[in-house]
Image (cartoon, rainbow, N blue to C red; front, side):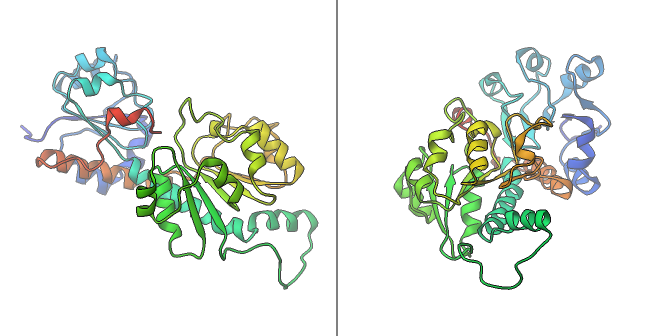
Length: 335
């Protein structure tokens, strides 16, 4: 009989081999007894229900069903939920914390590729690469070698909205470059901003003074359309808006108006709605560069999420402290 605690996957079944490829699954199974062929997508399923009664650790991921009181009642031995993705808001209920069940998330690991995408887009936008490529494709001509005024990444001001995990990582990645980052975040004070190495500005001032603005705030009722018509109007002519957070943080009707006027450009990895309808003007407008929610973990990056869970399981079972524990009090203002 295995002495390892019983664990159960709860996510979309096809994600298990992506997030837990053989080497990562083997690492996880050194700590827990888990069957990759048994994946909970419906906690009412009799087979899942039987496994849930024995489960001490729930390994969750995208597509995890909601963990309400009835589910938790059916899992009396449950002591930890280890999430192999970012936000737990879609399935976690306060009852989990009330019962003293530990919750961990791989959000920090998922932040890394989003920050890398953002850095790449900042540097490309500073050189006007994305717009120039569309211009060449449309005209089939090139101006040839020569100095192009108004572009470049030397001394360009980059405004970061939100000191989230991703926002902080973006600031860290920007340090080697001759850019001038600034931050806005209502939960950060001057002392913390100084520790991050950036000036702290009110949102309006950041928008007025930034050549590139990148959004890394969570989606909450307070942040819905936080970048609206008034805010976009504050941005200087030629400025670039990057959004890898959530589409609803930006008023798309207002953004489309600015793009049609040719005053701003936008790099959007998230949209509202998502996916965009086929008739959305964002597909065709000059100055709009839209990608299909690629910034987060994809392909071989998914294994990093599974490895984070395996490492958390090791910490949990050796009496260590979870490195990425999710605090209920902070969840309301988190992604």
